[in-house]
Image (cartoon, rainbow, N blue to C red; front, side, top):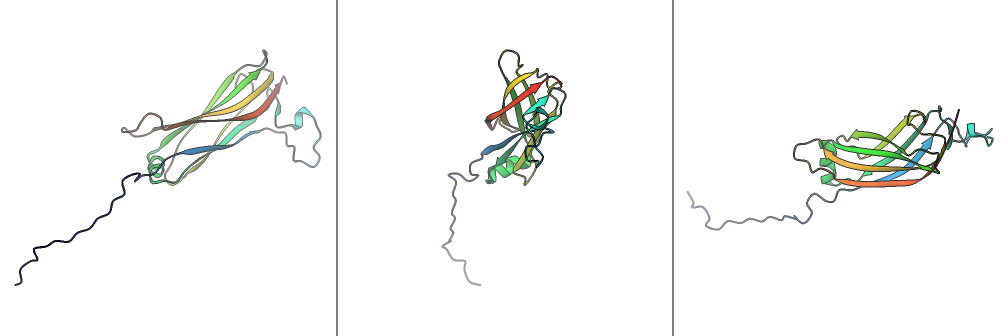
Length: 168
């Protein structure tokens, strides 16, 4: 039998500066939708035809898209079940319009990075009085549904839409 060599050879390479990569999200497509549709061929200007002018009993929806990057850290957070909270803020412009928020929440799932969050209801259901409103979305991402989670991962906002509510 031959003797084992006295020299051992080995090699490794580790990149540990940012092994999991950054985790971030973006918000886009803040949309208000109602029964009104400006894209119809027979569209005429009238409160009943505008998606941004609604009766207090008319159903409307407010939605936005939240998209996460695809780093290893983000993949882990999606898989662990991260809560995404969005508060749609209806900021009254003028003294007669109320200021109310409605909240939508979802929990992320594995291998899904784009989410659509939508609130649907009526102005009466959201306690909005007649008047003009600026509409914004304020988000909070986190915590993760795991005992080792940090409390909040990130915050964001998106604004720039107007909504008028009139009494039915």
